[in-house]
Image (tube, rainbow, N blue to C red; front, side, top):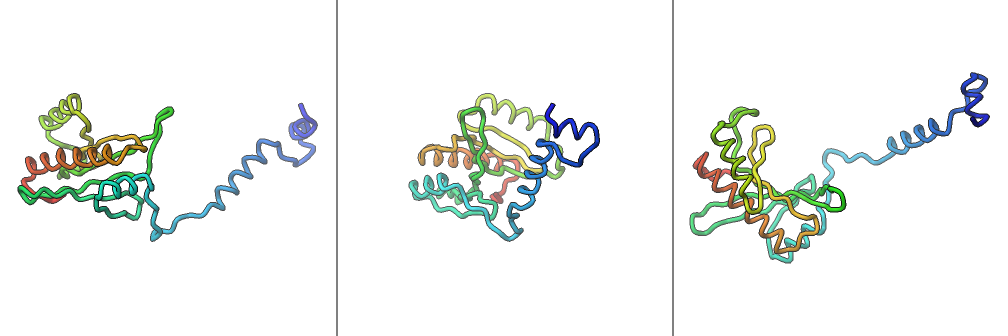
Amino acid sequence: PSPARESIRSGETTMRSPRSLRLIACSLALACLPVLADDEKVAPDPRVTSALDSEDMKYTVQDNGEVSVTIQWNEDGRSQGVRIQSKSFSWKQNEFRDVYSIAFKTDDSRLIDHALANRLLDENNTSTLGFWGKQDDTVYNIVRVPAKATPSQLHEAISFAAEKADELEKEILGTDEY
């Protein structure tokens, strides 16, 4: 062992080990990072806004950096909101993001009808593009796309999530809330 480590073991000095010095330095560096205030906005991923601009899609940017699009259908006057996550995630060498749309919210944050839950799971197994998910009291249609999706791929994901969520919203709620 090095003399510094031996001294530490014997209690002869207060010198810190190189490992503990690195830990202290990292802690201080993290403590000095700027913290976002509650009213500060996060910029959206420019790949998302660029793709939407290329498709001439109107959008708004949320404070958390997510991008919102509203799809409108002229035949029945319905509309559906869709969110595109700016924050992406990786699996091995690939980067993804979610495109999602709310279908409905439940009365109880934990429960949906068993028959409906089974039906949605079955649809997940046969869906062409997206899948159903539930978080807290909200049921979503989610399409996972590459973070580098082309403008047309992102447009298709948005359309798919909107159509599926709107169909279920109309069936379950009979409204056009989301």
